[in-house]
Image (cartoon, rainbow, N blue to C red):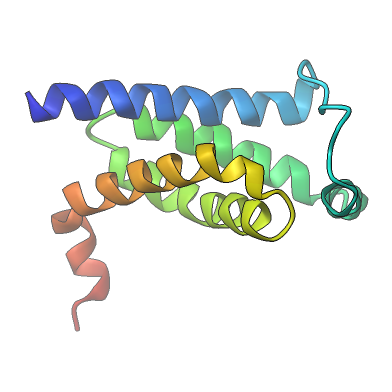
Length: 126
């Protein structure tokens, strides 16, 4: 039962990141009109670094695809982790209203990392 729940949650998590990554290239979801001023400045500054958003978009797409599969979920979690930290920090500092989405996503990511801890152990052993 636990594995089925983890698969469904991982599928939804992966699809959310694939959607976010595709939006960075296709721009099919316009930003909301009522963005806080500091968040709008932050986003504009990020867009001024021309290579940053394509890199984040590729990481979101590849990480989302890998996160969906059980075999490569650990690798997908490693790819998505820095992106998710950025999302979490952005929501903490500039848009606290987004924490209601960012915190559960971060919890799902941590759950997947803990569930795959045996795959990460060779990375941290001497």
